[in-house]
Image 1: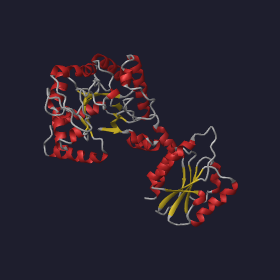
Image 2: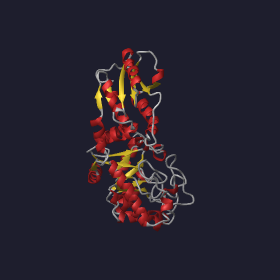
Image 3: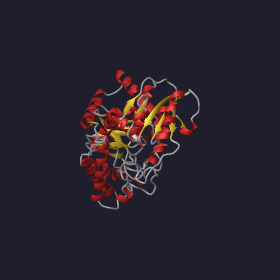
Image 4: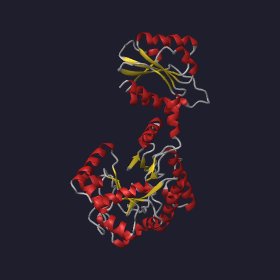
Length: 427
């Protein structure tokens, strides 16, 4: 039970993404990303949005339909939650961190377009999360770098709250908190404020959904509060989920949470309520594209025996013929990156292979003329080789007696999977 947030690096390599999704498949969690469209676009498979500031000048149907489309794509990928839409009002003094993430400066327009976005994401099959409560638009500073202080009276704050009130009236599933101090409300950042979370959001606005913090690593919070202070004050105020954006910090926060629970420093009733809310919204991870992971792994043919653990060298063809009906030449830079990252490989062209037993050579074969086959076979007589047969699978018959892998593809989706599995032979 809990949540996982995906950042853009996960999507750079489709093989990495499918591998991760295979690990999460079936787990009941909230799987989310910050893909808002426009200024923040995380998922490369979603057609880009012009941004909320422009969409705020269109109509509700346009916003709803785009968010439905984006939500459907996320659902097909396996995500079930999105940290969007942004309900902050645009101000002339707004820091660029909000920029065209806002639907505009008119609270009624932001509320109307925000509700359309919420409905679109729901129709698309993902849970929306409105942000950044109680409003980031008036902040002159970027909360990633410093702690903003918005010095306005409570009546002015109410104007910024209006879009959130509309969302809450329409039972929005989750709300993300801002790391901003509103002196009219509290001296603490809103994200750990009992006055903002419990009194304003929970009691005054009667909100019963998920309350989520912005990332705890943002300097607006981490510069002034320790992990135990953030956890205790957030939980005591009525918050449900903290976003820990740096993977290295996850075990620190998990251990701190356990320690605080063991020492009786956390409100057990609040913890129980938070777990109940999370359980209510969490869903088993499943996506339509996950079947590709099984298909790729089932179809790749590994005929590899014992391999000596040594440095890897990926042997690239001297040249590859690509027709106008073949875009796979675009794959080669990513394939090199995969080999470097997953195998720590070095690279040689076939015509420039060093005479050494230092390497295990992975011979990437796309096409071979008949007179070239013997030269490739002879490579195994002087060093350890795994032959990687990709496009011309008929070449398999010439390497049946040697370590070889038949991929049926040159796609990075397949090659990344091959390199990951090959690395397991060498551990």
